[in-house]
Amino acid sequence: MKILIRNRQRHRSLNKTKIINAAGNILSLSDHSGHPGTELSILFVGDREMLRLNTDHRGIRKSTDVLSFETRIPVTKGNVNNILGDIVINVPRAESQAVAFGTGFYDEIYRLLVHGTLHLLGYDHEKSEYGARKMRKKEQEIMDAVKKMDHKR
Image (cartoon, rainbow, N blue to C red; front, side):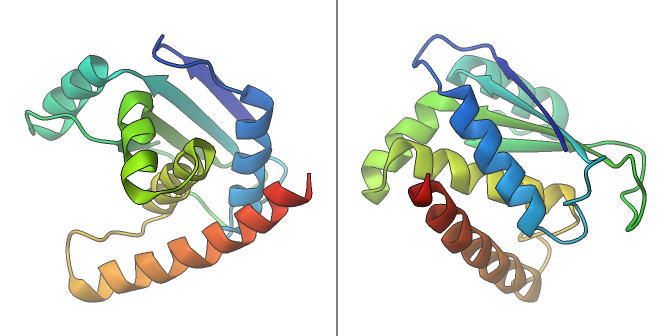
């Protein structure tokens, strides 16, 4: 697995090794994406950059916590070079949500990584209640496993 990280925010320093390990665990636990050739790009930004991206790409003029951008290459089981796409995480928002939810900062980063990864794999919580339930269930399943893996380190 290849996980690329780019940090374009100055709000908070990040432990890239911790994030890469968690992202690898998330990919290995996700539907058909744990192959060694799978590639994922993660970009960390501030609130202003997230507002611009959400406005430009979704037409929604407000900031958000996470965005996912699929590649145009379909993800196929058994393919040795699956490029999933890009996940963009708003670090200040993740930090404030961690406080609001009473979780740790990295637990919130992991939750956003899981959420973004599931979107890249075709899960959608916005089109139907069934899709939302299915995505929440998978999200919780992966989060529980990732937390266990992270705490063993």
